[in-house]
Image (tube, rainbow, N blue to C red; front, side, top):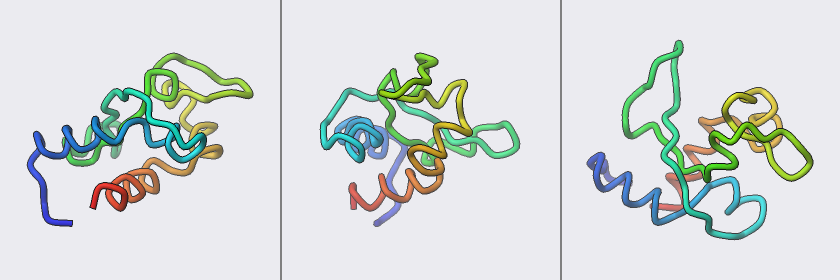
Length: 94
């Protein structure tokens, strides 16, 4: 995949929808943009994945869903690491 600008990348991931909903349920849901972190800091705007509010920030941790915030370990156990989800997202967009 050719290097995209921040604007192009954000449009592509917003058009794709939540990567977890897509992988788990085969559906498109409107996403937030989730920035991946390294040592507690955002890497950059191109290290982002699309997550719906439930999988991103609603704080869910039940049979139906786990939110990345604040349940990172359980989220990654259930859905894959953020880096794996980023690779998956890039492959789907390419």
